[in-house]
Image (cartoon, rainbow, N blue to C red; front, side, top):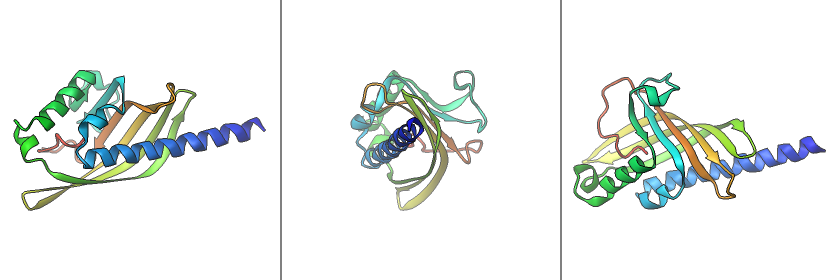
Length: 166
């Protein structure tokens, strides 16, 4: 009987985490960056590593390694209207799929998935594909992102205009 309860809890937690990740994608595509900031645990990290095999993000070079201050600064730049990336931002559509539960504790759920972003800017569509890992804290009863890692499939190539990836 206990195994059934644990399985049911895991299924509900997993389903809730997937809905949360879809909500994050919707906020980002809608450019609601302030609401996106509210999804984060204050101690969380947003990471876009260059090395596809990196695990020690603090000791390696990354496109992004944002703590709370850096996330807020990034959002400020993107919403201020003073930078080229803010005033001429790409329109995006994100598709997130292929969800797998890779870790599930009482407090943190780890979900791996695939993401495809189509960005449209100046009559050109660009496709970005990545493997995602979300670590989502459920400790407060409200899901919060503890870590989000975006592993772009072409991360070792020269990339431009990726500030909106979030």
